[in-house]
Amino acid sequence: MAARLLFRAVIMGPPGSGKGTISDRIVKTFALQHLSSGDLLRLNIQKKTEIGIVAKSYIDQGQLVPDDVITKLILQELNSMRTNSWLLDGFPRTVPQAKALDDAHQINSVIDLNVPFETIRQRLTARWIHPGSGRVYNTEFNPPKVLGIDDITGEPLIQREDDQPETVTKRLKGYEALTRPVLEYYRNKGVLETFSGTETNKIWPHVHAFLRTKLPDVSQE
Image 1 (tube, rainbow, N blue to C red):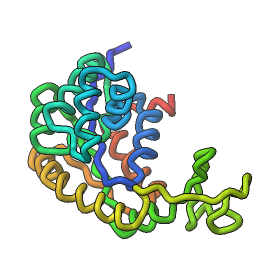
Image 2: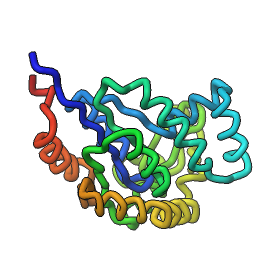
Image 3: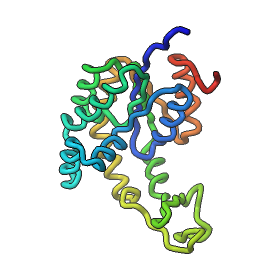
């Protein structure tokens, strides 16, 4: 059996764009290893690694983790995945990070999920959580039986700070300012593929069709 060529991809998209769902489907369908920078950062902070301690000191002050710190963390992890095809999620977020990644690995495709900010704002601000269990409701497509009340316990639901309208607007503006140059960088390199839409289930078939031109669909094997 011939060895499969390695395939390295990056997925980009604003918070609430369905990136997590699309990433899960890509990983399962095409047998890629998934590396989420957010998950890796949280794990290192939890384990109190050297990089985790440094990163936490910035996060605790409400600052972004510097390029060199997050880049070192990601490249260190990717070094242990040298024989795998992978999908990188949440990195790079700046052009220096993208250049450092390019110096270490050849990126075959960058998948950009282009979802209108108004759609994301509606999606995120409609999300309510039962703090005791983590049950998630959405007032648009999965509402509680009684507005603001958990179906099972009857306790009040809360809205995470991240999902409050002002915070969502701020996060989306921050993402756009930070990420637009990265998208331009990859567009100029000829590896950017943009998928536009308002629903994850309608965007996915286009992402799937594109990746099938690059990779075998292992879910069909």
